[in-house]
Image (cartoon, rainbow, N blue to C red; front, side, top):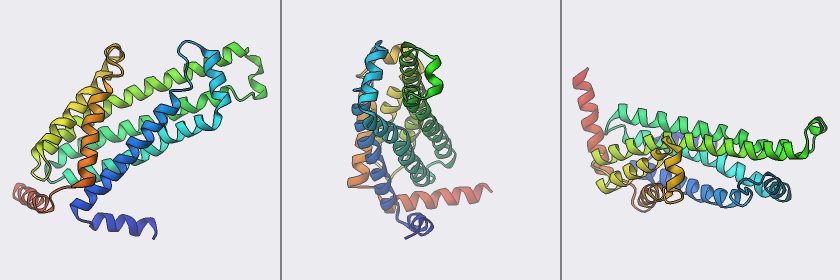
Length: 249
């Protein structure tokens, strides 16, 4: 089956099926993201550039996996979630759903582009001839600097995901095809990610600040996979939305 046919079938699918597909992509984000954080966290030794460089060089394949999973695959899956959520929540409020999608796509773009900083240590530590003008200590320090820039870029991306979760929480709360509690939990997740607007606060609350996002987005993921949305109520809300748009025009 080619991509065009698959895309058409998803577009024609029921809201419940789309919700479950979104939940499946969300699950991939959770699993791969968690594995990447676990694997990637083993490499960095805070304030020890030499030990960090040694860890990367000794486990290059694992490091490349962390980069691929964290920055490329998870970003692509979250783009799919964003597209499906936009379609699901258009009947609630098309404008808010569009703004939410914008924040998410910016966050995904930042996450994917931050992979440049994540991959840079491999280039710096690769032993290329042109790098011989730098001392070993300078190369190790540069590799650690790139990893710190990667973390900062990821933090910026989380701010956009914070706004996204807040807006999705609002849309869920205003919908009649998903439980309002899920909307409150997603808003809770958004507030957690928004602490990265002030990095000192996020650092102070770390790692506990991850809990709101894991709980809010995790519960929504499980609900979408197990239940999806109420098809009949979605169709009714979509009908009212189209009627209101027609009357307004």
